Amino acid sequence: MRKFLVVVDDTPECLNAMRFAARRAAKTGGRVMMLTVIEPEEFQHWIGVAEVMRAEAREAAEERLSALADELHALTGVAPELQIREGKKVEEVLEQIEEDPDIGVLVLGAGEGDGPGPLVSALVSKMGAKMNVPVTVVPGAMTEERIDEVA
Image (tube, rainbow, N blue to C red; front, side, top):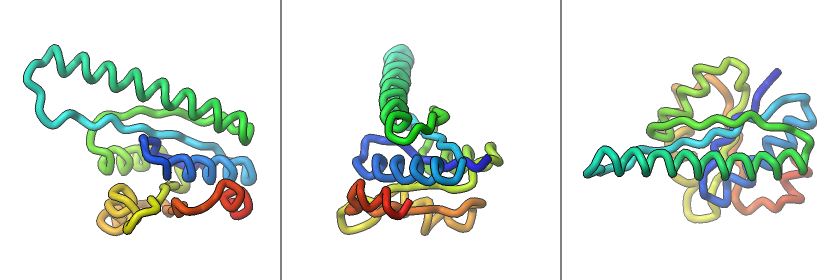
């Protein structure tokens, strides 16, 4: 069964990507995997402080994923698979795709600003040759109604 992989972060565009992925999964009999990547802090003075920060980041990621998964399930009836990884976002997304052969599509949300956003830019233009699944980019300006129509 094909999975639609969505990268969940704090950007508003990830909500569009989630909605699109959930609607497509519901219509095609697929599943959704919601991935959050916890990126390491750049500079850490104390190991103990770093561990506390890491645990807090993981807890916050679990809470956000759980809340969004509940919303997605209520909206579409699709119960998503939740995944948390630690590392650099682009590298972890690529590794998740490599490790899970059921992932058939990566769904990303583009911002409404001047460019598509750093994750879309990195994964599509810079790392596109390393991808082994198609990428769907959901424009940030799309309304929920339009997403539902095209999905």
